[in-house]
Image (cartoon, rainbow, N blue to C red; front, top):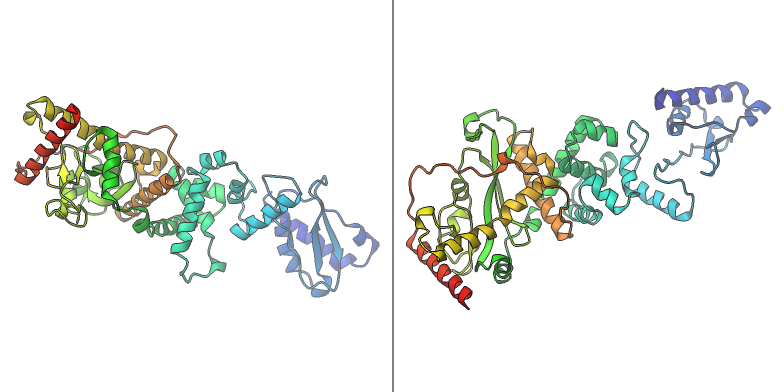
Length: 453
């Protein structure tokens, strides 16, 4: 029997008692009703529509330690409203002042409780969990979640939405992060939180848009180039590095148009994420949405950063000594150092240059692996291309917020061959600029001198 049916039975019984036996001794003795399945709220709402003002009743819950839990019903003609029962805390049975204070705090945070099929308010239940259990269930630490709550609240503070008709940010953010960090679908979230699947889909997309509003503050180009270069130098002694660039393929649903453009050489429909990371594995530049047939170099040329790799100094590279590092999928530029090709490695100095560069550049691929391991929804995005861009950008922002709160991924790493960059054959050999070749030669000499000293 569901909760609504139980509530209707309670309401019908009380209405009958009040309508037929009001004022009798038998009615005064009916003071205890056993309340199973948390159906008291349904009973109150049903009974309030049937009773006249002079027969209004007051429902009062006794002490929690009373067994069984009882509800007292008395006839008081002067009472003008029904006092609803509070939602029972599924995580604790204590009745001390601290628990009562926590219950009031949860009521302020979550508003009217929404229960799932098992009768629990899962969002409130997460508040009573220990930090380790919270991180295991949600996918991020409690400090990360609270920091994200504060950031979004500050950005969306001026919105004109009616608070009485919207679900609070805390519940929306819990549903969104659980969806991103696990393999759960909307049906699983319905079983946890009690909201319908269509409503959950709408709330998740709305929260993703709120998270993307943090992009300008969460993903920043290095403010201090000198300190960033020093951090990279401590990794594998490669000088002048402002970031490591790489690309990742995201498997998505087949688009409605331009099927051949998004099908890569492996036969998968993919969208490319181009990103730059610093030595702390934080994203400093993100660009997503390129078709799977694009090469890494073509993706770079399509960005504003690609047009600033030669005209140094500029907004990205204040001095000529600073540059990015990339794999052999990119072309050598003044602001982008790549390894020597196989036929160009003719001495140990060039070989040592390649080893240091590739080891330093491996920071970005390892960042991709950690992000995909935490946000498992990136492994296969069954959604439109526009949604893929929004969800991927949100995951990059959440990754940086986690690192800001020292929330490093400690779980198992998930590798996916479909995500690795593809080595497309170049249609033509493009000669590197002479200034870029001279700069790479200077770096080789500088590294050799540092090694000899």
